[in-house]
Amino acid sequence: MKLPHTVEYSFSAALNPPKHVVLTGVLLGTATIAVAILPLFAQSPVKPLATIEADVQAFAIAPDNQIAYAVQRVKRIKKLVVEHDDFWVATIDGKKRKIIDGDKFTPQPFEEPEQLASSPDNNGPAIPGSSSSSSSSSSSSSSSDDSDEKPQKGKKGPKEKKEKAPLPPQHSYQVDTITWSPDSKRLVIKMDTSNMAQPQGSVVQQLDEQQTVRPNTILYLMDSEGRDIPIAGSKTPTIADAFNAAWLADGTTLVYMNRTSGGFAQMMALRPADGKSRVLFDGHLFTAVSWDTKRNQAFALEENTRVVGPPKIVQLDLVAGARKEIATVDEYAGFLSISPSGKKIAYFKDGDTLEVRDIAKPAKVTQVRVAIGEFQWSRDEQRVLLKRGEPAKSADLVWVGLYNNAFDPFFHGLEFHEFEIAPDGETIAVTQPGRRDLTVYRFQ
Image (tube, rainbow, N blue to C red):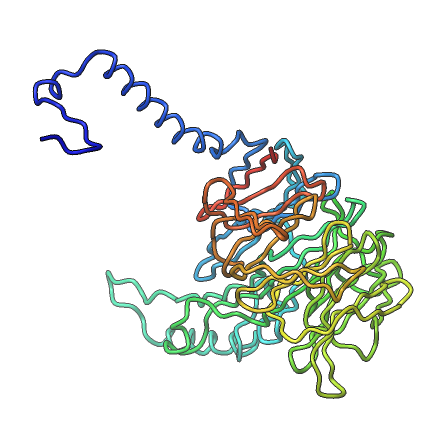
């Protein structure tokens, strides 16, 4: 009896199927494999425009597609470990030139402490608590004592131990961020600097291999050839205790932030040519700023310090000094960003919600559910490229659709340490995890 809707095969037929059945199976299997492999070919990395094999600590792409980058250079001087990064500029196709040699560069001259000041009798620093007169008297007394005791025949007298002068303090710096001016002619470098002093004192005090003296965060101003941009009235082309800086469209005015009490910051402006700095929007404090300096504007999260209330997103005219309230923000988690056209802003409301607002209609909010991280805009402003997690850690990149909830991995999930989309929106530069080689790709 045969069951309905079943096919009956003999055992011998199963072992020796007809040739047309075998051919059909082979074709179907080949087609299945091709369908599975094609997406992998489509997502495979394209040939890079350029690869710079160096330990790149920070980089930035200029509006004209020049790439400025800093290469880590660490060396040991006796017990001190100091860092002097080199500065390079490269074209988008990888032609590069060194503009600053770290071994010959010191952004700030070091003022030695009084106890380490050079003595008049020699070029080395004096030992704390000692002087030329005391050393000479001690040496004369020791020589008189030694003269009374003549060495025995066949034996040499005791050798005089020369006291080694301590190593002069060494300057160390590490580049954090690099920012181009809108005209691609100037740069501002945020770096962490410190003066390293050789350990002195008791054994307990020397347990650390080195001692950091007066750590500081500074902004260093230079042009695209690596030359200092002097600040009138200042001995150095640097600004102390400042961060998040940018050049205005005129290329002669720098805007930056200075920290105040309570974790807030005030906005400053400086013209290096005359050395005059001033507070912008005096009386207003901010917790986040996104610069759009080619239009001489910025968008900021302004804190209400006079009355209890939620912060506000404001639009700031950096030349005229005008201020416009855009929206009140009940929650803010970070990464405020202005779109390339200057018509949209985006930020993370909380750990897994990205909010997008149109400047013309700020009350209309678009929310995207995605994990928090730093991001940059696509050229059409319909999506953002996101690196989830902490900015200092390597992670994969993903394209996030702002209006269609689409999520597309970039380079099929490869991890990168740092990334930047060029201002023209056509290329992207990334650094690899570990030894941070810099690679440039063109978007397809």
